[in-house]
Length: 98
Image 1 (cartoon, one colour):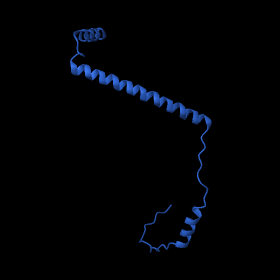
Image 2: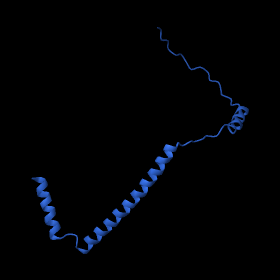
Image 3: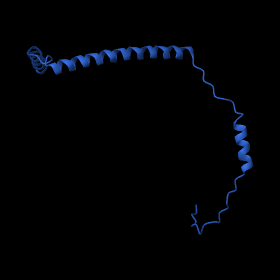
């Protein structure tokens, strides 16, 4: 195998676009068939079930928001940190360490 050095750059030829072909391709692209999507019955059922799960999640997040608001109110009023809660937390920590 021989490798020959390149000895210069060849002349380039300008490219001429044919605008007639371009307009024809645009016109024919309008007559192409349209995309179509078919969803199976199983997929539709799963979609409905997923929507029902989302409703349950919203209800859970609403309940969680209510609980958080309740805890914030207890903390602000000073009724959240009681000696009983503190003793229970310390006992639980000691049991986990031991």
